[in-house]
Structure formats: C-alpha cells, structure tokens
Image 1 (cartoon, rainbow, N blue to C red):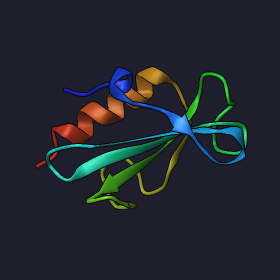
Image 2: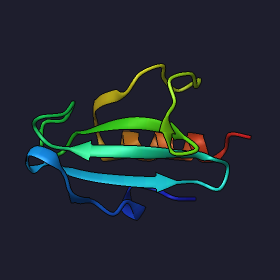
Image 3: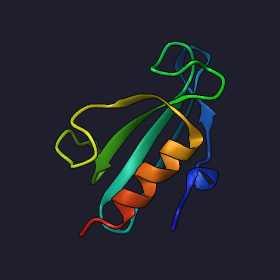
Image 4: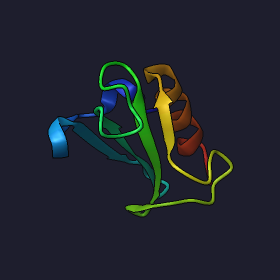
Length: 85
C-alpha cells in the first residue's frame, strides 16, 4: 500500500509544492504544501481526493478538500482510498 512517503513533491505555484498519486482502483490524491493553500507551509498539508484524475467531492472520506492535515493523516486517507472498490 502507498503512503505519504511515496509522494513525490514538485515545485508548484506561489512557492508551494505539489504531489499527485493515483491508485489502481481509479482513486488518487493531490497533496499541496505551502502557505497559500490549506497548509502551514511546514508540516501540514492540503489534500484533495481524486477519481480518475479529477477532484472528487462525494466519498465517505470527505465532500471537500482536507486542510491542515499531518503526514500521518495523509497516509490514513491514502490507505482508505486504496481499499475502495
């Protein structure tokens, strides 16, 4: 199973960093780090759930993006998404 450590962050807008990881079941995550996002720019992250590459707002996990979450919480979401059918 993929975890936070599998994310590969790249430079993003306004000095932020961004990582996308898609899973075999069609779900995925978009994770942002930076003060211009729902992140403190240091150790909390903004996460959007993806479905076939697009932001998905209708999962049991959330109906919006998740903000100010820790690495451990990112991993928790990733593990839940990977277990979806």
